[in-house]
Each structure stands twice: as C-alpha cells, then as structure tokens.
Length: 231
Ligand SMILES: C[S@@+](CC[C@H](N)C(=O)[O-])C[C@H]1O[C@@H](n2cnc3c(N)ncnc32)[C@H](O)[C@@H]1O
Image (cartoon, rainbow, N blue to C red; front, side, top):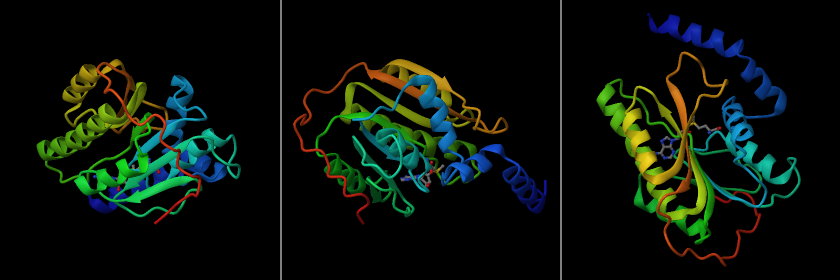
C-alpha cells in the first residue's frame, strides 16, 4: 500500500477511535491510558502507597492514570512514589519524578536507581518499544533487549510480591520473552486490553511475585518528597 494511503487510513482510524475521544474527554494525553486502566481493573495492580516505576513514560498518560490512582483525584497529593523515564522530554505531571534518558544507558539506570533511593518497588511498568528498522530479526532483538533490561531492573528492585507489566509484540521474540518471564515470576499472564488495536500484534505480559527475590534494599529509606517534576 502506498505511504500516503497508509497515513490517510491511520488518520481516519485515529479520528474515529473511541479511545481517542475518551482520552480527550477524560484529560489523558494518550489513548494508551485505557490499556493500563483495563489491565489494572482486571488485575488490581495499582494501590495508594505504592512505589511505581514507569519506563518509556512519554507523553505521560500512564503517569496521569497512576497518579490519579495514588491520589484518588488529580489535584490532591499522592500517597506513594511515582518515577518514570523516557528518551523524549515529557510535559510535567504533578508528583511524578521524570528522568529524561535512554534506559539502555548505564548512566541513566544509575540516575533512576538514585531516585529510587533503595526503596523496594511495587510495580514496574514498561510501555517502551524501539524505533523499528523494518528488519524483523533486528527489531525483535531490540525489543528483547529493552525487556531484558526491565526484567533485570525488576529482579533487583521489586518487592518479593511486586509485579512487572511490559508491552511486547507477538512477532518480536515473544516466546523467548514469555520463557524469561516464567523463569523470574511466579505467575505470568498475557493481557490484550480492548484499547490495544486488533490489527496490532501488541500484547502485554504481566509477571507477579519474584521467584528469587534479592535480599535487602533500604526499606527505611526516606520516601521522595512530592515536589513534582524536576529537570
Ligand atoms: C508508546 S510510548 C509510551 C506511552 C506512555 N505509556 C503513555 O501512556 O503516555 C513508548 C515510549 O517509549 C520510549 N522509549 C523507547 N525506547 C526507550 C528507551 N530505550 N529508553 C527510554 N524510553 C524509551 C519512547 O520514547 C516512547 O515515548
């Protein structure tokens, strides 16, 4: 199909998409909020008081959703800690500590760990996807690499009963990724929320409860102040 035609089809689908309209109505920056919302409502993932890390958080609709869940309603203070990162900049979300950087870089991981301050994390979210090259093996390898890093981070920082939710694509190393999840988590569930387009091979994997939790962590670390976004 010609590129113009693909663009026109995408614009047509986007304008007529009920989740785009709902996102506008409810003040979300992206329709992606409804993917997390449905998974959260099914699985009861997000609760006030939690420490949540949001990998690949821009433009910020998951950040808005998690903030609403931790505060009851936007505008009030949050009960919990919200931290996220993205290569791209993000408009501030109140009480959400944003780091701009590439999760694959050791320096960025160190920045994230410094912000986490040794607190054990309840939930790691990853909606990250690599820029696609169109070369299937190379795209699958990049996707797997991002998910490997999210699993590694979770292994080191999650509470024993914590959870990791990652976006995957069925045609990008999915079976390998499921295998790795099963090695790390007690329960592994696949989720295809209604807001995830049928024609997309996107699927979410949820791992709950570490099989081999790491000892320690600074349980008594001071929680972050709720000073909101910092550059
Ligand atoms: C689908 S968007 C996330 C949408 C977000 N969950 C929301 O609700 O607004 C995926 C994001 O992952 C980010 N991303 C991809 N690779 C990344 C990496 N290596 N490090 C940090 N962010 C990355 C992209 O820049 C992009 O903003």
